[in-house]
Image (cartoon, rainbow, N blue to C red; front, side, top):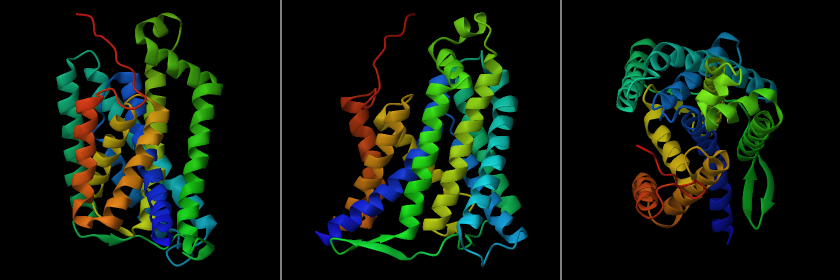
Length: 300
C-alpha cells in the first residue's frame, strides 16, 4: 500500500506537468484547428531561458520560493514572446492555406528550433539549478510527500485556476470562445481575431514555460531535444482528453502521468514510453474524439 501511494503521488506530480503543456496544444487547436508541433520546442527554450537567468541573476545556489517565482516569470515571458513570433511569422501568413501546408510548417519550425538550440546552447545536457530544497513534508501511509511534488501541484493548480478564470470570466476569454466557435462571425461582431489568436499563443506558450521550470525542478537535466518526447506525450494527453477541451487536457495529463508511473513501478521503465503511445492508438481506435471531445460532421 505504501508503494502504491508513493506511485500515485509521483504520477499526479508528473501528470500535472503533462496537463500544463497539453493545455497549450488544445488551446491553439480550439482556435485555429492547428496542431502546433513547435509547442514542445517553446517549452525547451523556456527551460534554457530559466537556466541562464538563474546563472545571470546569481540564483544557482539560492533555492527558495523567490528563485522559483523569478524563474517562472522569466520562462513565461520568453516563451510568450517566442510563441507570438512563431504565430506572426510562420502561421498567420498561411492561415488561409490548406491545412497540410500549415502542418508541414509547424513541423519545420519545430525542427528549426531543435537544431538552432543545439547550435546556440550546445548539444550536451546541462544541469538545471536547484530551485527548491526537496524535503519531506509529511508521511501518508508510509509514503513521503515531498516539497518538490507539493510545489509542482500547487503551481499547476494556481495556473489552471487562473486560466479557467481568464477563459470564463474575462472579456478576452469570451472573445476566445467566440473565435473558437466561429472565427468569421466573431470578426463580423467586431472582435479583433488576430489579437485573440496572438493572445492564445501567449497564454499557451506561458503554460509551456511554467511546465519547463517544473520539469527542471523534478528532473534536473535539460538539453535542446528535451521537448520532443515530453511534447509528444503532452499531445497524447490532449488527444486522450479530447483535443480542444481544456478540462480534457487536464484529465488526459493526469491519466498519462498516473499510467506511466504505474508502468514504471509495477512493470518496467522500458515500457513507459511505449505505453503512452499505446494509449494514443487505443483512444484513436475506440473514441477518436477523446474522453471529453465531441464528434462533429464536416460539411463538404
